[in-house]
Structures are given as structure tokens and as C-alpha cells.
Image (cartoon, rainbow, N blue to C red; front, side):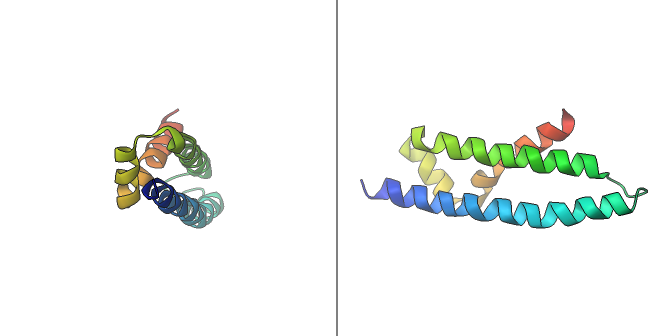
Length: 96
């Protein structure tokens, strides 16, 4: 029984760190895109990407309590699986 709270804490720590990195990278990129209109990507797609990724993080956080132990183990042991849902959310937000 003590493994599940430990896995949830590990995943929660990763979910707390990842949005900070996301915001730290996306906001300067959006300012650069706004100041240089001839840039490859505009500020609006970057903002949509950031909002979609935040939505992916929130969705993953809400699903944690109802996930089976096998899925929690997978998320606790891999950064890729923690970042997959926010990445998909960001891409779908830009496409939308």
C-alpha cells in the first residue's frame, strides 16, 4: 500500500516541474514571435500550444487517482509518458 502514494508523489513532482519548464520556454518564444512578425511561427500558435499543454497536464493530474497501479508505475518510471498527454494536448490545440 505504500507504493501507490510514493508513485503519486513522484508523478506529482514531475507534473509540477514540467509546466514550469514549459512556461519558461514558451513565453520567451511568444515574445520573440510577437516582436519579429517575419518569424517562422507566430505568437498565437505558441499561446495555443501552451494552453493545450497545460490542459493536458491538468487532465493527467485529474486521472491519476483512478488509474490502475500498472499505469501509475509506468508514469512514475518514465518522463516520456508523463509528457505525452500534454504534448498531444498542445498539438491538438494548435491544430484546432
